[in-house]
Image (cartoon, rainbow, N blue to C red; front, side, top):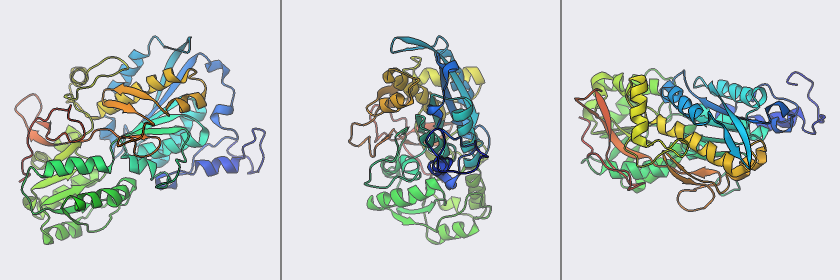
Length: 446
């Protein structure tokens, strides 16, 4: 057990030292908690032989809580869809979904992932929303031989952020991922920014974290290749409270375009300081990501919110429907508003897509209680989801590396409305997927 003496041999044939070595994980180097002397798949689980258990991890609280706003509604839809169970390989199974809050914290994410693996004996682990709430969960799943699929982390942050090396074989056997990457961001930005005349000087504020480091290494060169001058004052630490030096740098260098990938509280602090110090008046395009994705994150800025440009990985206008329950994108957005009274949230599509993928891979496995069979079923999995059509393992532009499928990121802008809600997000380019309709043209921030 976790408190037994470290030794090279155990009755299961896997040492505690080796398991800990395999579980020492990605974001922040978080060590897996509660490591057992044998992996989850090696332990008897006869009492659950007729039940498929799916684990789901997302940030319900903490700095990234905006991503989890719609998850209670999505979990309700998923549980309703699986209410009658699932028949796989001629056998009928009940389906149990267990959800956990990562608290937007890598250490807590690792803990709850291990709770799901060792305490709930999950057959499949789902995780979503930022490296802090995904990478440790994927690492725990990989170390314990539990199949997992995740989303809403740029694939470079997930794949390379967990130790994979460019040009090398994938080190991951059990963990899979679908999400946009820096190439999708670059295409969206280049198509969006060309709609407003600027001096093409881009002030970037990219943090020293998994997202920021992947963006700096990959997005910056792509934007420079597209004809923009990247002006970077250097990486900053999450939780910074004084951005005076960065603001002065952007003003001095006349950066008419601003781009950032911060945790939400950091952007709120920065943008208010930028307004107080006169930088927002110079900005013609304020392009933000990781924050500003949801109405709540924009409304908190008051008058500084409308006009911000962002990206959407799902919207009610997407031309796709769920293979889990047949719900269209429009119906999903309307259903969420009717149920909660809140405006649509783009995370709705991504979270429901996880369950679309879960159903497809469990059916394809032939035996949902065989962890290796489920993991192997991902290798050439083809599935229609409410966020788009995914196909692992076929090569080409949508499979940049093993284990990953790229998904749409569509550029747009927050605008004032006269309807039920004060603001709305308009899609203003569709370079990734022409089936998604453009709803407007980018207007200068100020």
